[in-house]
Length: 125
Image (cartoon, rainbow, N blue to C red; front, side, top):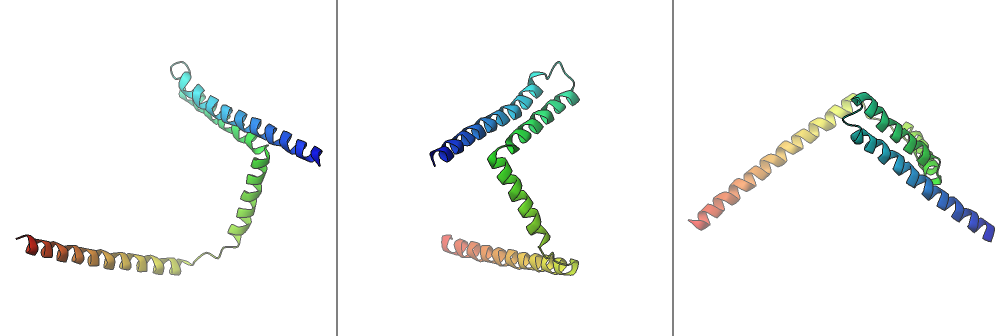
């Protein structure tokens, strides 16, 4: 039992180190973009940012959290396939209903505002 706990802590420490290295890679790519602003052309500096981002993502995905994130993404894709999307007619009808309701509420609040303004003017003068 102690061996499992020790291995879990080592994995956790290693994952923490990997995540720190991933953040450093990302920040390093951004730092290089601005550090070489006067000496290197823009396309190469953009490649530095992309390389830092890719390295950071690759390192982060090798951690336990990265693998859990990937499993979550895969599960989400499966669930999205199960969604029943509305037809064009249903979408149009709902959009029209929302527009009409918004217009009715705007008129209601405009009328309420006008009535309260008239009441305030009556009380003040």
